[in-house]
Image 1 (cartoon, rainbow, N blue to C red):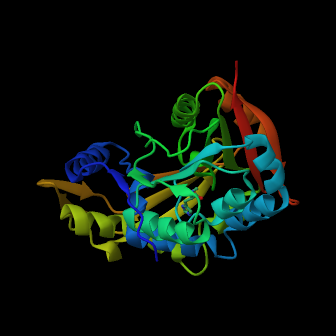
Image 2 (cartoon, protein in one colour; image 1 turned 135 degrees about the horizontal axis):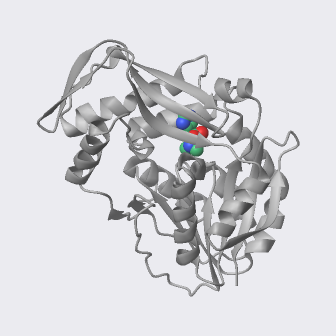
Length: 320
Ligand code: AVI
């Protein structure tokens, strides 16, 4: 496997500890979903994507297979492709094969293990493409590296409905940041999960094999490993329910019993059945998403969906 140099712009451990303790002090307690993705969490997420109930990945891949040529035509020649939350880059391969002489590929991910594995695999598959991975939290200001060849255009690829992991305010903030990163001549290609019935949604986030539950609880195992916390995983459980008013799956870690947990020199008391919010997975109608984009100064110019209308890939350009 080729070795790829990764630009490290990761948050410091102290900053993670501060953010986690801050979240644990809130009522209701909440922890940011970005902390799911250490090496174990990224591997569990790949397994979620292959679960029969988790329709998102299969639907998005079907859209990519069918419409990638049209997407590449929208993005144009000599594009610098920046991917947020790149993970294994499964969908990106389709796009990179279809693009007309892309200048470079910049995957941005918070998980170093996933980033080096996918960077090396991409370098094998695209030997002539400049690959410049950045290990960072993409919600912060990421410094882009310079490329060997100048780009005609910058484009952010943000697949997987990861934008849905932010609430409306956070999504608009992130879309604005994307608009800034790509500039007035840039573009964005964003995967957005669509509204559907409660049963299908709750099944997708409560797979029978228990992979999503293991993924959720791994966040606590990670805090034990990296921050010296003492969460007893057997005394917590995963819960994901659809909030139909807000149009989102809400995932919680629920304390099975009354218990104390120690982290960063603090003691946090959990009541029996107390629920900590760990993730939103927002689902949109095409109109709702277009409205969010407009609030961020972006306009939806094309939207592709799968045959069952479960998922969408949206092509956006900055509004003049
Ligand atoms: C990465 N993100 C879009 C996934 C989702 O569907 O919200 C993360 C996930 N959480 C539980 N299952 C998958």
